[in-house]
Image (cartoon, rainbow, N blue to C red):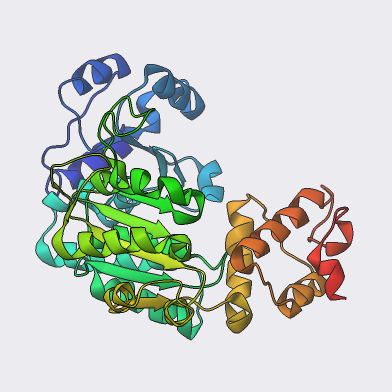
Length: 384
């Protein structure tokens, strides 16, 4: 009760819309008509303990994001709070800044931005932007630092960006970050051009009118129509045929297109992100893409270097990937040396899979991860 009272006292100024409840049954009824962006629940809400409280909340299917506030010492291992789907746990909250940070982590800055002053909002937006970029696009190399700077600088001020880099380097990660920083609402339509048969590319991208062909029983909007008002991400652009490239170019210039079998002109406005495993200029020089489309896309190009050219990022990636796998142990000295010596032609994706093998085959009693315990084919064994 004391903890809840203290938090309520601090919340009333920045979050005047906050409401308090003493029973879960009362809370469930109220939330049907009074839904807050975040639900704060004190672990003293139930005398039966924290685990019972979590179980009850899940059983009652209470809507929205939830933060459990606890003073229990056993939560020390959670490092303050952890994010688990819609749940967050905040440990020993004594300052309103802690609570604000936790709300932002769980529900985003928009959940609390209306209750903050402009200086607070600007400060938090900058901090959260830096943290988000650093926690998703991992690395300290000049290349990764430059990409961070580009994403933060252009923010929402772009209409088209091309990302080039070898397979497995993280182009889709960059595309997602660009979309987030652009503050563009849904939809975010992701299309892998290599998976679309050339004969069906028009239909998939631009949609079709009912009756346009034998199996066209309903009209379809296509990816372009679905992306209206949002972001369209075309991955592996090098596999898009030239006839479709011509239609894409016209779409980018006029924002208009026609569905397959249709007579009427459709409109679609979106931000475009494209990506290729081969440098854009090489695609043009080898006649893989049209020159006019090349000049349209080359205005803003982000190049992500292969892992072999930024090996200083490998230790950070190893730590990040093992944490994602829930693995607290780290490679022993010999294994880490082999990881650093290997050139990783599959880049970050290949590194992740190798670390997964290290974790899976490590004995439960081992204090460190060793390549010697991997029982299947391993690139680390070939490095020796």
